[in-house]
Length: 336
Image (cartoon, rainbow, N blue to C red; front, side, top):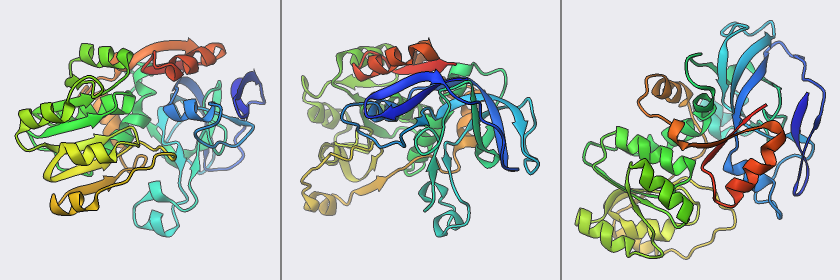
């Protein structure tokens, strides 16, 4: 089969590889329908790399497909089922897994990073991380369940009420999904901060929030004038805006840190956190949120279709990666 293989720094090759075969009784073999390019894939293929992956690994972890084979111990799924996959395979027995925190598993393995992923015709995964999804949902939307499940986990950290105010920093796919979830939860005023002209225009056309460019507007002043005291919740989806987040949030409010930027460093005035009595929360991957994310898409609580800007065949995956790298796309779907 053809697959997009991470060879070494800056080299992603579309080439022929062996089709995976079921070797363990708890595995399922999936024919890939659609696989979304994640920002992590962009970072892995950058020079220098912004995220580490195992050399020789097929990338791709946000996907949907049909089960075409299963091991003898897989009883909750059948051949012919359409599924989405939690790409973070957890052991189930370490201390964190037993604390119901599988996203913090001490032995976690990431699909498309640590082992072969879904930028290919077929993908082999453990059956416990595969979830049925409606065959009626468009493949492009189904491929977005994984990032939506991560966004849902972030929103679970706080108690959004009808009329709440929120600031979301970063209008990439996750930022826009969080904004949609806030809207669906009844948030009254939502401010979306973005500096990329393409994404500013895209977010404005989407119409789910007040879009502000902090480089050309006094975003803090706008938020304060609209809320009197600052936002109830601030979500930093860039991984580098904790200082600004503390500025935008009201006393007693919550800051949720979502984005991961290992190079980000900031000097924080700790007294601001103390005297404003701010809650600062980290959120990492999905945690028991796949069923909820699937239901949201199946029942159209939110619609991720508008986020999909490009659909490309596997042979054109590099074009999709470059558009994302240049900030000229939001969600790119690969169909192998």
